[in-house]
Image 1: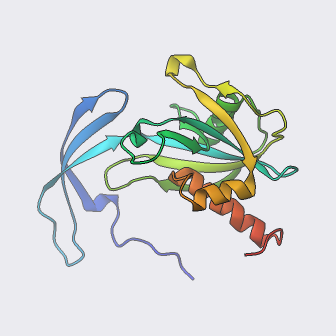
Image 2: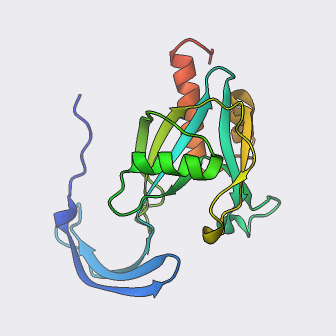
Length: 207
């Protein structure tokens, strides 16, 4: 079976104008563009704002001996307006990939900064766009096994305003938290579902 491929490619888009309209912690560009239509011809020129975040990576830390996952909890401004929910989110270790750095190298660096743990070889899970309707962020997701016995404490870089608490919980409790909506960010959901499917495929757990 051949994998699905889109009808059109990047060459079927014309960017007529592009301007930086905001530069702060993040950046936003304003584009005027047009693209080919499925029915033939070209769309009228239209405007879109593009939120520039670049490449990011996250890593699911799992202790197979204890059947625990190592997560981190920190304040997230994007959840500030959420009703009846704390803006402190339970997440995977994650961060932005620096220029010239591989996502896998970033994963190892962030694990040390955010948890104090070190990882060896990490396993690639998937790569995805978080919100391609208006953001260029591309996320690489990895899995790594750790000894969670001494995983604890508060970590992060003060100069980056990081205040990150390490949370070690049983895998089944993490899955339950996800199902209840207590873990509700895409990166953690994708990784925990992947881990659950892996457990079921190995026969370690029933559906």
